[in-house]
Image (cartoon, rainbow, N blue to C red; front, top):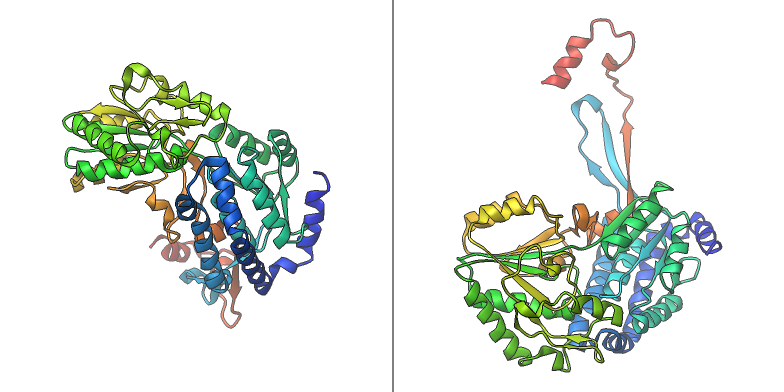
Length: 454
């Protein structure tokens, strides 16, 4: 580990990565290699998570290709200096924002979307002109193997370097001094990353998670709501940082919603989704056992079966759940869906003041006043109205958490800005100079007040 970062820092100092032409060449080379390994990646995702090729293309390789194409098309525009307004007190002059790379960055990726959440930040780091060390997850071992082949085949090792291994390898990396750290994972490890980064005053982006709720109002289209929530919960078997974690449903429509969700799941997978061959599996035995312990059989109204041999858990709906139940004490990260009822939306917004801020929040309602009340009174990373998860697919908008659910944001141009230092340059024209700011001060205070206090 001691030799990796110094060698990469020397490469960065050579200035090679500062060229926009060089960056574009690297992005195009990555696209070519990804196309070559497309089938291998899809197979690896199936082996690790039982993801169907359709789901893998939709949520992994397709999103990466979209991000690559975005940067190949827009990099020259993104990287050019941006003119900003200059106040009257600084005239005559001009101000520009220049984007410069941080240097050598560390990207720590998770196992749940190992292709998308490794390559999307890496693409942005390359586009911004950085060198990057990429720490792959040991849990998604098949996908990590293919990703390491792709990266090693595409880039010089002093430019982009792959590190595989467990938490020990990750801890060793965090002892090194990086110029930026981008971490995706859980809150506990996020705290370790931030603590380590603080020793070198290294800036960080932390993409974490949390308990993302679905609030279902009286005015919601129940059949459509059930369809969207079930889709979001079974996607990757609930192992999605923005998956619907639990439902807050108005008491008058709770029975109707549960019935509609059972009907939707039964239509898709039968009585027990874990027996369907295309239903995704839990990543490991340890993660399976943790999730299975969250199921309270006395509250299960649908599903509930677990298969240790296949590492599969039914889509499981639990009713009459309270905030005190075990399933509400941690992010579920599995296809388990607790339902909590409410009667007054004001009680819901007050309750959220006592909870950690979620990464996502979903509102199902046709009542625009209620929609506005929730958005304006509950803090969360981002979300959607009458849908789930889809807000993260828009690379024209930032994605990130707030509070315990994360720090910083990325996607599209926001990823470029994340991996760039925005350097302000002010250029003063010398044909005229305002004498007010210079000594002696004399009786200039009234004039200064006139300019600044108006």
